[in-house]
Length: 174
Image (tube, rainbow, N blue to C red):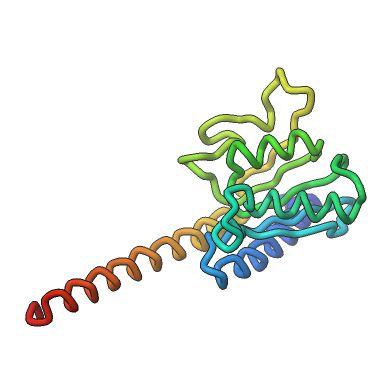
């Protein structure tokens, strides 16, 4: 197996994105993390904050792109690579195109709303004036497991809440 320097860098940065996703989970957010890199140097990072901020646009990628714009004092982010643990949605994909991100690397595919190949491919849509290079499936098992475990736990918690409500309504139903 020939592991390239690019493969090693992709895994290194994806591991950081996975760690950053844990910050979202600690806040009760869907654990998605993103990091933006140029020349193997971290520019910015972000994680989901939609619930915390009551802001549907506060996805990890958007948070990361906003932070990078501040760091670089420019909304254009050429020659950068965005690493994200979950395939971007259409909103995030559009923001990457507008920001002129050069490359997208993501872990898990999002079969419901993925806009980098799973449902649509906005980041490589030829009529647009910019397309991104895409590498998918980097540390996919770890990224997928992180999101899946979160939703499994959420379902168990909701089920437990429903049982408590039932017991409070009818305490003799044990």
